[in-house]
Length: 236
Ligand code: ATP
Image 1: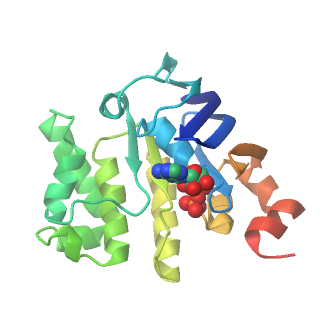
Image 2 (image 1 turned 90 degrees about the vertical axis):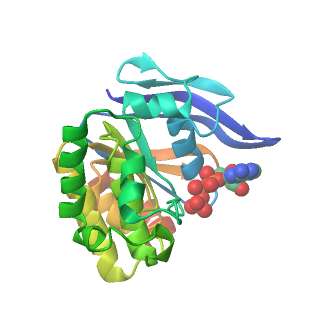
C-alpha cells in the first residue's frame, strides 16, 4: 500500500472539515475522490500533501508515518501536488516554473530527462517555455501545474481538479495525459468535479459527503451506481 489514511479529522478554526476519513491508495493505482462542493475533497488532498495539519488520525506513506512531517519533507519522500486553481508562479517563465518543481533534486541528468518527458506530454509548454507563466491561457497554466508537479518525480501525484475551467477538447486531453502518466508508473490521487471522466479513468474511487466517505468501489461500479448517477453524473 502506498498511501494509507486512517481516520483523519481536520479543522479550519472551529469548522470541522473532515470527520474521520480513511482511505487507501495502492502503488500503480489511479484513485478518484468525488463529491459535491465543500465535501472535503481538497481538504483531504491538503492533509496528504501536508499543507494543513490534521487534528487526529494517521497518514502513512510507503509504510512510514508522515502525519507530522512538513510539506517540503513530503515532497522529498515522493508526494507532489498540482493544486486547485493552478498555483503556478506568474512572474517566472514556463521553464523556471518547471525547474522550481525539481528544486528538491540534485540529479541533473534525471531532471533533464523528466523535462523532456513533460515536453513530450505537453508540447505546448515547450513552445512557450520562455513565456511568463501568468500570460499563459487557463488550459496552458493547468498543463504547467501538472508538469511542474511531475518535475519532482513523485511516487504519488495529487491532482486537484485538473479539468477545471478547460474546454471540452482539452478535458479529454488532460485525462488522456493523466492515464499516460499513470501508465508510466506514477500513482495518482485525483479530485474531480467531472465525475464521469474521473470514474471512467480511475481504478477505484471514494465518494465524500460533508467530510465523510459515504461510498467506495471501482470506477466502473460507481459509474453504474444509481445514487452516484443521480447525485454526481447528471443522469437519471
Ligand atoms: P469543491 O469541490 O467546492 O472544491 P471540496 O470538496 O474540495 O469542494 P473543501 O475545499 O475541502 O471542499 O472544503 C471542505 C469544507 O471546509 C467546506 O465547508 C469549506 O468551506 C471549508 N474550508 C475549506 N477551506 C477552508 C479555510 N481555509 N477556512 C475555513 N474553512 C474552509
